[in-house]
Amino acid sequence: MSVEYATVPKGNRRSQRQLHKCYSRKNQSRRQYARQLTSTISGASSIGPEATMAAVEAIFHLLPKHLARSKIVSLGDFGDFCLSLKNNDSEAPKQVTSDNIQSNHLRFRPGKEIRKIRNNIEFIKAA
Image 1 (cartoon, rainbow, N blue to C red):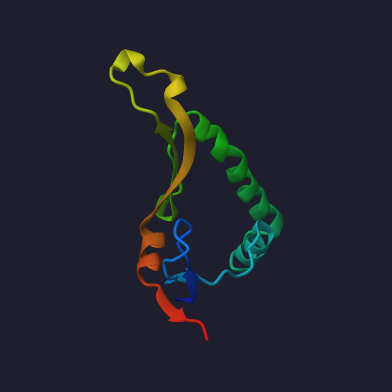
Image 2 (cartoon, one colour; image 1 turned 90 degrees about the vertical axis):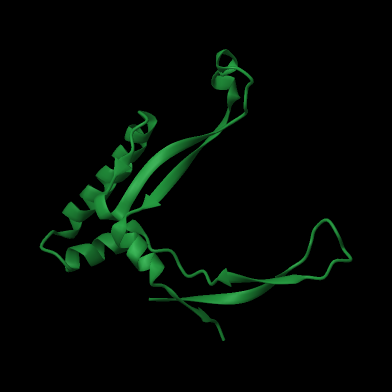
């Protein structure tokens, strides 16, 4: 599998005199929407498009509920979803309250199959 990238110059916002440096940026392509995915899945299986879409919608519906209950949602070899917290520190355990929590973040830990694909990506410079 190959991913195209482009070279992008970026300047230093703090210093106008500093030269631009160049970075790689993945070329963005169009989004793949759930309806398109379910159509492809139903074409490659014996499950109809309506049943496939219902299963995907059920995951979308249940995922936030389980995350809100502090559960790790594991989708097998696909990966795991969980919430993590960004906190302000405190000197003592008794000083830690919900006021210390700045924000929460949705984390995705890729599973075996996704890591295998990710580790085998070839990067090609766009023309």
